[in-house]
Image (cartoon, rainbow, N blue to C red; front, top):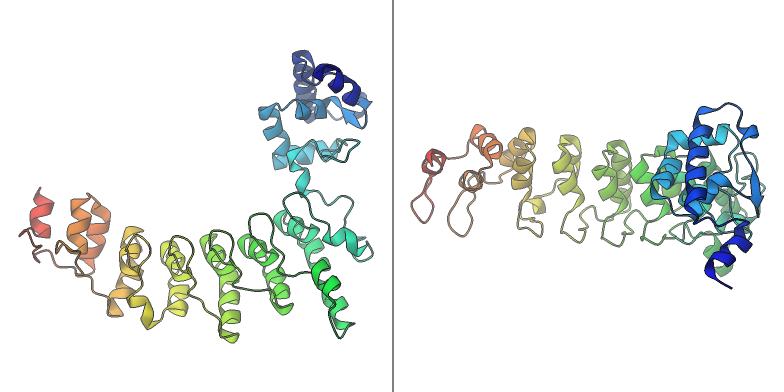
Length: 350
């Protein structure tokens, strides 16, 4: 049977037909504008309608439109099943991975355990999807159900441990704690930590929940994680694949309170894989308060490279004027010579 004939048998139409694609796109736009969706929806075969025909046809611009949160809300209001699946249970819409397949706040406490641990192709469980989709009510109910289960058994069996692995990673190496930290879900983070989720389990690129919380400006969550790690006598100085520690991100973001919390004497000697220390990073990102903090904590503002160039000279050589100004304002020398006799003043004139 020809490919086109197979498509017709499966869907009841040829979704690759340009006329069908145009029709589906036109219909989709009407759906977003109409209040009477029932009049224009038409089921074709196996649960597909013409809107989803466009998804099958890989119409990229329409896919992006349907994935848009605002448009999804309109579609849902009009009665469109944006998470529709084929007869073989394969979603058409890429956004379907954020669907809970019938899971709701009302039934999360009674639905089967198998449903709660069933993962999609990206190894994401309903807990992952709830956190990713900002549905905190469902996420917290899943976690509390897990917590109650633990309280009723003295020994966690291998089977149970597998089913409710609190540190389960998705296809990217992210745990539920990682996702909750990145999204700033305070209560979920606290619950996960109470359930002994690992605060230092790394994603594939070496980032930990603490790294990502700071990188995503979730400073309150970062403070919770730091206190937890300190209480557990665990490290707050793990490096990612680029040699960046949590304090590196705190410096980049200009969060002085976190820098003060994370700071240790060892940080004076720390450099990332580019060879930059924290004072250099602070200057690079224009964090004046942090440049002053590091200077006051005995980090030399006139440190030199192999050519004897100070940080100011390096900045001027690379035409990084803002960085040079910050360093000079914090007391960097403009007359110290490099090995070639150059000074910051000479470089500035050039």
